[in-house]
Length: 95
Image (cartoon, rainbow, N blue to C red; front, side, top):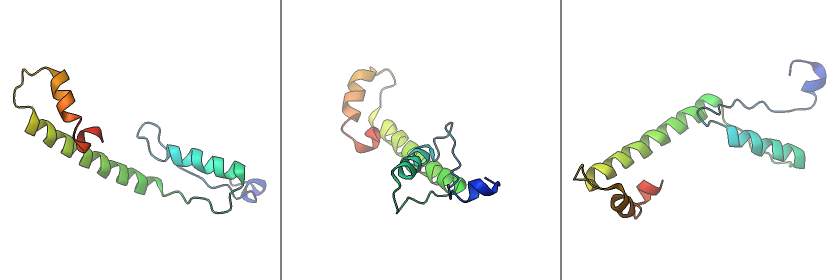
């Protein structure tokens, strides 16, 4: 990207992490917009900001899932299938 001929193309750089699922979908969406020559392209967030948002979301989902399991699974010998069917009713479990 430092070469003069590449700078003129005005191609945005998107930092991604497939391991942590950060900005992967944004990179492909931005590529599709470049191919279609869309005027109003999305502006990708920085890697650090996206990674922080993702971590906060995963922490929140994990906490709500754990609370749901603790409140509904009272017998540690319960069979998973009926418990699973009961938990499917809750959006926190589906999320």
